[in-house]
Image: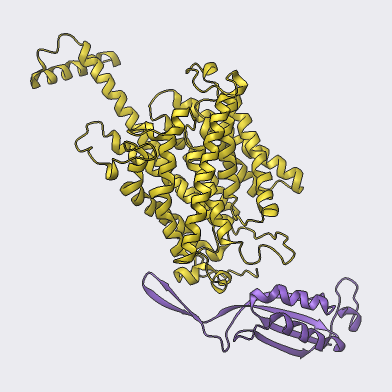
Length: 459
Length: 113
């Protein structure tokens, strides 16, 4: 039997099945049932793809954990792993209980007011609300876990747990409702303006990045990071191979992050995957080249950060830019991240062990602004709504993007400062000097990551 | 010729090195060591079971010096490593019989430098 004969047989069985339930009057020919079947298949395909993409984005948690562990010292490895485990776990619960409703519930203009605990979806045959929830939960978890990198090596575990609640319950969802609320029942002022952020360069990454900046500023640098003359000292990561594994896992998971945001099972997945990959590759190459030029040797950690920078930057425009545009965006992000890391380290004198502020905050903002330049819907044949400056759309989109980036910075950074100062004054944010020198693993968790190995640090 | 052996806290190493440079002592050997003395150990726990860790991390310095440099070296190490708390460490001075520079074959006082 060939494929078409099988389909006809299946259709006949289905029609007979429908007929037996009492649809006799409706069913005349194959017409209406065929259309309903196709639609049902499409919906289920969308669900499958969205779920698979959500699982890929969940795997990015492992990527973040490995990057952060690799770029920090061995004596803090247990602590960094615990922070990563908990910010996702607590974040999941907080987002389910409060955040999801604030982000996607029917809005009062500023935030959502329904859909807490995903109410009212019992018995939904499509189960879209649950699929949407799991997809959005892992996105919220991504935003939350960015901050643990910038605050590594000196943050009290208790303080970090408090923060985890607030980001996924409040800070992330409210901004998300402004930009993405309309994806479900809500609506926000940013999306009404025409703000484009397809998979979350600002909504996820910049929010996380600016919160990370706030946290790192309130915390202060690690002991020994800046000499008595204020000069930055290197505190090398203990396992660059782990960090590289983490970056590869993140790159892999990003194929769920960006293409998954189409939430539809069709050819757009491939196109978005291409733009994503091109940007990541360009970012890695340019970061390597720049670090080679500036530091005389191609720096592995900078190149890894460059790949991530490319990924973060394309996250906003992966659906609306051309492949060439994606390459250019990634290339600029690769250069930008190297410059930004040096700037934050030496000029701002903010200790950021993994470059989270530069990769996520700065490159997220750049990627979002880049939409205002590189959006090319007309060239791609998908409409004209938000075409950017380089493709004949004028500066309007750029202005809207700027508004979104500015709002994201103001919201996350200011609230972050308030939150971390509040935590500092209540449960305490920074670990004691003795604990920090000995290693947070012993003080906070009473165990070592590398028991049986002698981990010596003289810094 | 004497060999000055010092056990210090690992985090004091930088300060000790700076103090030694100031005393014009530039050559030394540094190794990682585990040790215990009057300083108590600490507790770890793993899956509900307690462990007592008694050997603590230390850094061992070995500096070969001529007679005139012995006291300045000791003073420098003490200046860099002292915190006033138990666990600061100890310094041993042993007599050094011979010293040979491998590259040139010099011996004795010139070899120590």
